[in-house]
Image: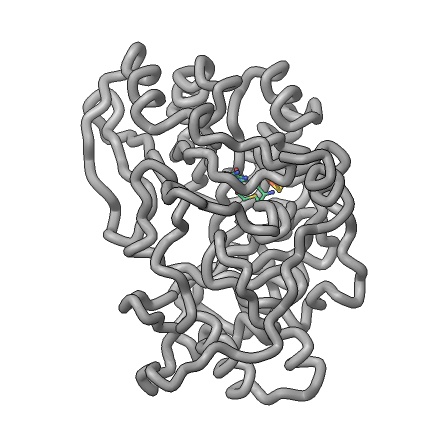
Length: 359
Ligand code: SAM
Ligand code: SF4
């Protein structure tokens, strides 16, 4: 990467130009659901609530954090709630997950969760969080209607945690996990990104999760870091992890929970406990992807790796009715790519980094 590109990555959010014209849908069947040209149907909605974060994981954020999204460009609580209602009522979405950035950085998170719970009763509402400060909010979020959480935790070694996240906050994360369990936000899943720095600690992390009653899933690192340091040759792959875990545990392949579940499950020491591996790079699951994403600025993103975004926020603010908004969303998803293409020659990472998309 050139110095100029580095400067660019550090001074803007990497927000792609939003397309003015909707993709053509003349060949799209007239169905309400979020179908695409490759026969997939999106049922799982990820909603990014902010670009702000309390940590600076090296595989995601630049050391100084992402530049702030101006307040008027961010979806308000009411806009998030309305879009979630449109997704569930009109577009066949069955599950909603809040993410970011760090969703706990939004002071109105409880209001958003409660509003969504009232707007789409019965729809699972979960959150992906780093759990910093969750200790003080878990009970309130559960009362507001949150059903489950995923916590990102790459290591239980304090020094490694501080190095990888550039913040010494492991104690707060562990307290947050305990508070979430006490509040009934279970089963609590832990996501760990596979990095060379923390690979040796993977068996300790698995043992910690087994003892704490958490379900652990490792994720291959994707080229979505703001610093653009990712390189295929340096990436820790699923097989390397299995070799390391195999030095302490007996692992037996148990398949996937369902075909669209990204994690391949392994029984640990004969079960019933399992560990999951999301091999997003070496064993991509794009053909079964059922995700649709809303960025914090209110654009629909059909794929993590595609910068072809369609605006919904300005449509809402311009007075569009629910069906017009739903139609824009359908058009955006019809245009979804077949796959991320990370392994193809000439692959170009997207403009937005993971924290600016919502993982
Ligand atoms: N801040 C919250 C958290 O960390 O859980 C939510 C947002 S974070 C962007 C969502 C998920 O993306 C986390 O599980 C994180 O580990 C994962 N992630 C971030 N950068 C990644 C990368 N380059 N490759 C794979 N996963 C990544
Ligand atoms: Fe923040 Fe989550 Fe990105 Fe880590 S992975 S920097 S916690 S948004």
